[in-house]
Length: 320
Ligand code: TXA
Ligand code: MG
Image (cartoon, rainbow, N blue to C red; front, top):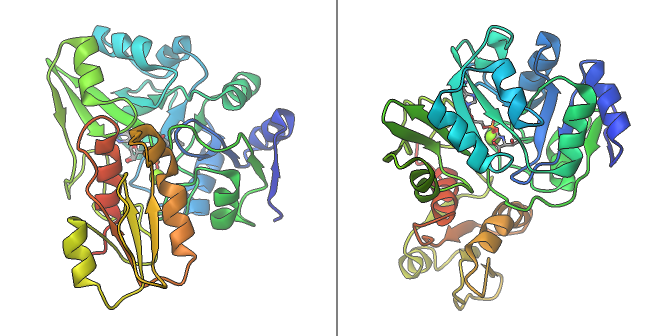
């Protein structure tokens, strides 16, 4: 199968109507989309990504009024949806029957999101069915933030990549679930715990770093580069790996590196959103270089910095 990159909504819609897969741009990362109401299409998603079948998929819909077609939303969830959708925010809700079990991996809850990207929202309205879409990368690898990244991972496995330019947020959506009188934040992203607390007035509990995740995709080892990555105190790491060719990822600081090593400052002016936007592209670029280890700083643990820390922590090399 030949994979074509283009920006034509009709072409994308034609493939999707035939139960084939199309990579779609969103403001967070590119998604690997198929008709969520077609089991054939959904099976194709798991296969194209080599994704384990126990890991459910997010349902992408065009507008707020679509949510109630697929899920039951309580008052607080509706409040969250109105505040943060469209946007880098996914809500976990009790599903309605129409959502195939294949999408939710057997769970009675469905994750729903309205991506904030003009091309993809037009595509969703054009086809008239919701799109199931995980990030458009082979399972376990770094998520794609450009059409070119998608091609690198899925060339020959899907017919079409809808090119909507580089993703503006750069890390995957926050995943939240209202649970009685609290909100569980299952995955950190562009919508932060502080923002959720402000809108709902409820305490927000985080559910990160678990090895028995209730969002099954939150496995400890994920988003991993092929070159081993280590995160922590940069001076200690640089000392530990002083004989290696290293790629250093920092937020604002400039560290002196030896010849053959490379420094990547994600935002010299200290803009955390710029750092998030550049994170995955930087990890991918380093992965194609002649480098022995990737060393990453701890980012400020606030705002979208928490999402950056979360993704870098999961990308860390695991000693087996
Ligand atoms: O920003 C995003 O969310 C991107 C774009 C493409 O929308 N999508 C994305 O999908 O990151 P994926 O599949 O890489 O991550 C989805 C996460 C996984 O951790 C999965 O376990 C969780 O959402 N999830 C999806 N449906 C769920 C469900 N029914 N119950 C619990 N967790 C669910
Ligand atoms: Mg993913």
